[in-house]
Structure formats: structure tokens, C-alpha cells
Length: 211
Length: 384
Picture (cartoon, helix red, strand yellow):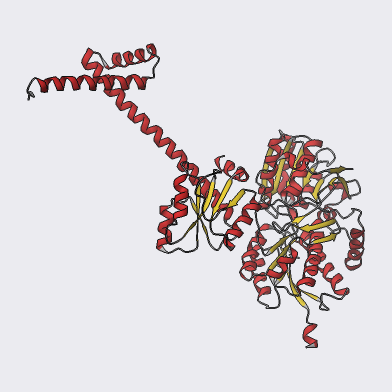
């Protein structure tokens, strides 16, 4: 199903070719044209972004290219990247790794293989995007659950509540004050920190720390 | 010097005269040889005749590669006419590309290929599947029964058909694949299933002798083409001649060419064909494509004076030819061919009768992954 979408949406892709205008770039553009993508070749790489590309073919050689690095820094939402490499020497391979390309198109470019490299790259790119999203979501969840525990413990200690009662109190407060549970939890933790601060400071002012 | 200048142009001709796909490939062979005869009778190219080296791969996929290699080991031979099934083309392709040779491929196929060393002379799915699907949806209903031979073309063909069907609100009632040499008895289970499922149309992508066996078995089981037709892209005059008029009546085919279309070029073509081979019963769209491709080649050769692939490619891109089907043109974007699009139905006498046709050749779009219903609607059609 997922695969169907990648193949089905090929023609809607906005493709950028960041590669010097030579025979390889020409061969690639012609094949992209046959496939039916909207393709554009720009060299040197643009210094600012006017059109957002879904997918970019980038030249990868033995040394990093400032123009390409600069272009990639400009894009906050990373496009799908396909490295165009003419050598398989370790320095070229390292650059393929460093640039985090989603797939590779070997040079000299032949029409056969362009489509496969696009499809594999899109699949990898989609998957890594999905994973990034999922990880962010899980991180957030773990963090919230830590905070919830912390807030519950504070309430349990101060007001001598059971865990269940503490949770209900937080939820009630959230509803009554039209805030999210996460916000209320945050407030409880912050207030508690503030109060603790006071106590610690008073103690210091009182002239000593009890062991 | 004199002797050397009269040395013929040697070309390879690679079609199966035996085996499962020989019915159709023999017609391609004859189309090729007829065109070569014509050219030679008219004085050849630059006074040199075209001389074919003919080999029969016997419908064995690996044999195509072996023979292509053998042909190309002759330094004078750089051009091959041949291949029917995609699997055989895929075998030959690397050999062709490695030697920068040239292949003329006169067969409809599933698309998604481009080689600078191939001229594709048959229909891509946007030129035949799409028009056929729309015609069937409009005239017969939306429940399709898919049956095909088990290799890439039928599966891809069905994928295209399924896509169009979904857009048109139709459904695939069933989908079955059989081996290339399926016998009459192998269809029993399927024929029973067709009775149960009761679809609106049967879409067959069977090729080779399986086709003949299926139509025959369908007829013997009481199937009637006028009630529940079998629609196909691959069944044509050669198969119908073998199946017989009774068993093939009512069934439908989409192709760029049918041998009873009325053009001056077709009349001449058929007359010459009859003179050379006796009967025109087996003249098919694949035969016509093979014939036209030899002429495209000869015309190109007149301009280049060489069979060098780089030179041929330059003059073949955009080349036109007044073919029996009407004017055709090699698309300079993708080496496929602008072709006519026609749909015909076999009548009581076993002759294909034109049902509808596009009024001008359709541009090939070999990389069309998701065909849209309205693609064809944009091409004006003529209904008979």
C-alpha cells in the first residue's frame, strides 16, 4: 500500500539536480523527463531557497562541496537525497555517509536504475521521517510520564494523598483551570521547586545546614 | 573496391519459429522479411541489399541471449530485429548495450524501460490498455475477470487495468495466472469459476498457445463472446485463425492495427504479403510493427550510410513512416512510437470489425505508473 503511493506519486515530485551540467546531468534530466517528474538542474547550488524540492540529486565526490553543504543547511525540512557518485573510493563513500543520502545513483548515469534509486530513496526517506516523528512523540511521552510521577509524589507528600487521589486532584485542577494535565503538572513541579528554594535559602540565612 | 561496395548490409532477425510463442513470432518474422524483400527489390540501400541472419530461439528465453551474442560476434552485424516476450528482450538488452548495437523491438509491452539502443515499435499501456478499459467499462459493465500467462507483461497489464477499473468504480472479480503452455484441461477450474462469479467481461493477457487453448475451452464450455466477451491486448488475427471463427466470434482486442483496415498502404502491404506467403490470415499488429520497423531502419540507413548505433539513433528519433496502420513516428523523448489506437470485435465470420479508434496517433508514455481515466478522454475517438 505504502509502496503503491510512492510509485503512484512519482509524477508529482519536485526534483532538483545539483550537479554540474555535463553528460551525466543531461542523461539524468532526460530520464526524469521520461518518468514525468518536474525536474530542474541548478549549478552551482542556489544560495537561497525559492522552490522547495521534494527530492534532490546531489553530486558526491572525494571532498565535501561547500555549495551543496550550504544548500542542505538552508533546508530545515530535509528533502530526499540521492548521491551521484562516480567513484567508490573510501573518501567518496565517507561523503555518501556524511551527507546522509537515502540512495545512490552511480555514474556514468544510465536511464536504467534512475527509477529504482528514486523509489528506494523515497522509501528510506519516508521511513526515517516517520521514525523521527515517532521518536519525538515517544520522548515527549516518557518525559510527561516522568513529570506526572514527580508531581504526584509532591502532592502525596505535601497533602498526604494516595497515588490515585493525587492523580485525580491533578486532573480536576486541569479541568477547573482549563489547562492541560501536562501544564498543571509543570506548574506543580515548578511551584515545588520554588518553595524548596525558599526553604533552603531561609535555612542558609538561619546560619547553617543541618546534617 | 567494386566488390566491396556491393557487400550486403547484414542484420540479425531473432524470432521464434518453434515453441509456445511461435504463432505470433512467425508473423513478426514474415513482416520483417517482407519489408527486407521490398527494400531489396527497390535496389537496397546505397545499392547494397539487406541480408538477414535468421535464428530461431525456440521460445526459450536464455536462447535469445545466446543467439544475440552469436549474431553480434559478426563485426558487420550491428542491428537486430526481434523479441516478443519482455523476458526475452531483457535477456538481449545487456548484450545490445554492451556492444552499442541496436535492437528493433516490434512488440507491445508493459513500459517502464528506456534504452538508447532500442526502438520500441509496439504499444505501451497508455496506447492500448487505457482505451480498452474505458471501452469495456462503457459497454459491458464493471466486473472484470482477469486471466493471464504467468510472466511480467500480464501482471503489469493487469496492474494498469486494476488501477483504471478502480477509478471507474469497477472491480476485479478474480485474477488467475497460468503457465505459458497451459492446456485446454488446465482451464476447467477457471471456466467453472467464471460461471460462478459471472463477471461482465473477461480480460485475458494469455499469450502463446495458451490463448488458443483458452478460447477453445471457453467455447466448448458454452461460453459465448456476444454474451460475455473475452477482451485482450495480445490475441489477434494469427490466434483467431487457429481458434476458428465460431470460438472467436464476439471477442474483443485493442491494437494499433487490424489487417482489414482501409488504408492505401495496408492494401499494398497485404497484396505483397499474400504474394509472398500465400494467405493473409495471420497478419497481425505485431507483424505490421515488425514490417514498419524495418522500413524505419532502412530510411535511417539511407541517411547515415552506417549501422553505427549513435548515428542511427540520431536520425531515428522523430523519424516518421507511412505504415499500414497509418502514419507512425518515433518519439524523440523515449524511443517508443506514436501509434494508432483501435478496438475491434470479431464478427460471425471470424473477422475483426472496428468498434472505435483514435483519430490521430497517440504519444507513447512508457512511464505512466497510474493511468487516469481521463487521459484517453482527451484523445478524440471515432466510434463505428
